Image (cartoon, rainbow, N blue to C red; front, top):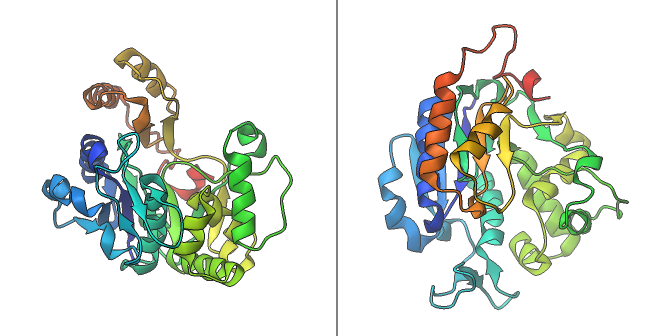
Length: 309
């Protein structure tokens, strides 16, 4: 079997969050191969100290086509970098991170990947051996009624189906976005091939021209509608991560309250980076919560696929 690799797209503004993630990965994740940090070339010096035998810093330029190039930092909007080309309007760093996840999954030396954003912190041990190929991996599929009111969801459903050549889907429709997401290399390659067949152009150009898309929605709807791909996945209704998605900063009391809602199968915690919650606050709250944790019950396999689904 081939160990699962970890993928984290990140950039300079998330350095401290990413550092906290890496510390927690080294402390709690076992049976993984490498942890790849996908970083814009201009930010490589910032992340050099995180490189190790286990962790590799990957320049974005090695995964992106040569025609897609970063604009100088002086040409930016809301302190965010953009990539330009003659094929489409400039792509934001957020869009490029989605493209990097797809590109990395197809070319890096692993058959399975666990994708983690910079704002995740693990507070329990998490063994990835159960997700090694050829075992099935979880496909997070949130119930329709939970995501029906999300602002961007209808557009992402529409663009996913258009890019994959699927008929329009009525709303509400499932959502595949979450934390601790697993992808299969061959499935990702098949998804990209489908996008290129449908659009008649290379997949990066197709995504740059689409503008509003979600990489997780693309993967989810591809698997859901492809029998061969579906055989390697198990639909799941939750991820093992306590999440905070809002844009209001949290204090330690808020974080302690949120963490108290963690169930015994949760292994990680996430406060979205755009909330502006200080990293030291997150670190203190998670450390305090971890100190209070009792050993998991032997009757609940919190590291198993069964706990996810």
